[in-house]
Length: 272
Image 1: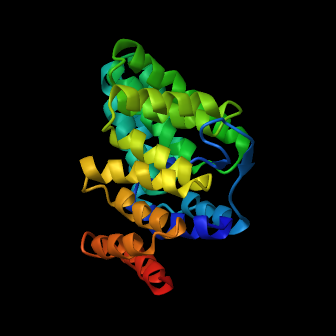
Image 2: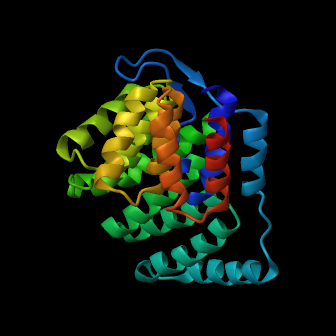
């Protein structure tokens, strides 16, 4: 798949959710951790910038001001709830780093596993939207700072370990992230996040047969995973398994009403 096609696929299904966890790099060789190449185009950056610059309506702005005033005087016990409300408004406006900032402040005040997880998850979401390396690095570090605190107390939280792993995949040490994803799958071979992300990494590195194997496992255990179902079709298509690709895309058509996914599926079917 050419780089432009990868980006087209991403934007075809990006609003379904979950695809913001895609790393901003292509792993050329998943098994050996060979050289990395940056992916993305001016069009991709422009589209994401528009999400970041989404306008905030007057009512939300007024509510935000009130919540921020309340947050300043709130007790540690009250801080997290108010920060969540602030975060909801900022997230609605596409300002994910601002949402994470207030949840991080609340986490510092309360120092509870719940607040660490909410802050870390918010920073991870902001990380997946980041458009430059410096900001990505900062947000990734914040993500790890909070989520690792939760993992220290509860190492079984594989969902959080997967998020931490994905912050490393886009770093100067991507193999650390891939190793962590493998550890997740060793502990839980049916883990949806682990299978999905390893499949995406294989696809981005051009290893479509390996990607298909990952997505086959994913949908075997999680048939409702629409992104996995869609990418299984893409992996079949790119590995020249046309009969399987056609059947898979037809199955996806019966699983969702999302117009962007359906449009992309129709495009693939038209090329088979």
